Length: 431
Ligand code: CMC
Picture 1 (cartoon, rainbow, N blue to C red):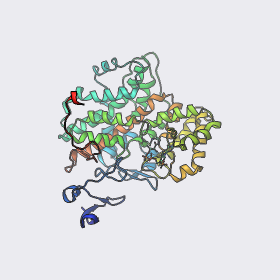
Picture 2: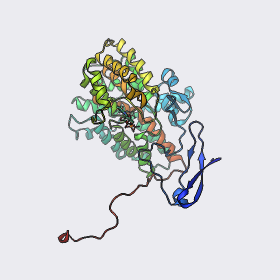
Picture 3: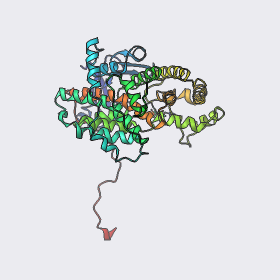
Picture 4: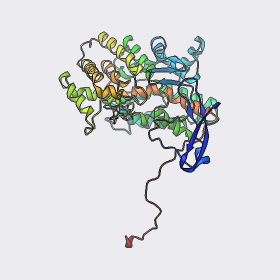
């Protein structure tokens, strides 16, 4: 596997060591450091994992300098234009695009797992009506292991697959139910005659007294947004799922941990934060003031939906979403949306500003997605839930890949201890 080596020289102790270098099919070479402590007695230090690979993975490839994103080798632009969310889900889970019969079987399998156990619904009653839907999602998804424990042997590949299908299928049902709970409205059952995205919109917006027919423009927009959000290699929530799973925890517990991580505003919570920010800015005349705030190191304000750890070029997902955003606004009669005008102005000013140019800060996937969701009638606090529905595919694909990897071990980082040196206990009356 490792044809090349990297020589590490420790000048202060006059010694050196050859470290193996791994080369993936794409991307930069990676130095293996697992034996460093054993051989040299030192650890490496990389908080935030700026230069550290945590695993081998064949699922998603990103070139942040060039703005490239591929799922299983397929460019995201092609998948967003030509594929469906469930076809992409199959691709991410199984590694290849499905043949027509494989896709039909997979779609049928997912459709027949969309219902949730009736008793699971009682759990919602424990949440106050104004609970954030992401809080409900974390709790309800975590509880799935209490309902579907017939297939929780993680060492059994068929059990893993059943859990993956259940999770992907039930996420929209659980998400729509958390919205209905906030409205104090009855939950709507999934419909087997609808596609994945149309079914989700139906569970969100139908009511027992009024039928809802999903708009094809809305269905297509959700399909594209779900495809774009389906995976993004070792991001914070996926790494959380992997770390939780490395202890052999059950998949539902691991995905609940991923949902909790996604919620943060530096990660998936940014889509909700972008809309809140645009509403706070309020008017294009205020944009320059907020750009100044974002550049001020004494001000905690950041331009939400801007910047990315990996992309140092325009996020390819944001480019696609911006186009879809214009299409959705035009077809829903919101072409002159003040929010869109504000977002475009913000992007325009920021992209010309030296602060953003020098730091290579571009709009990311979250910058325009909230405007689309808003136009489709989805409330702000459901935006990150939408992200979670889509990313549940990536999370399960990574969890399955990790569990099947024979080199997988429990994730256990080390630290630089900078606390008190050894000292003796002092009885309370002597302190
Ligand atoms: N507004 C203003 N300044 C920024 C921003 C921003 N949005 N993002 C980064 N910077 C500055 C930051 O202050 C730092 O400046 P300096 O070098 O002078 O200290 C420099 O750019 C590098 O930033 P960083 O925080 O060290 O970069 P990071 O890779 O640790 O963080 C990030 C990446 C996405 C957390 C960050 O850019 C950010 O907070 N963005 C806003 C939140 C957001 O949109 N998150 C969604 C990310 S994409 C979807 C997802 O992951 O779910």
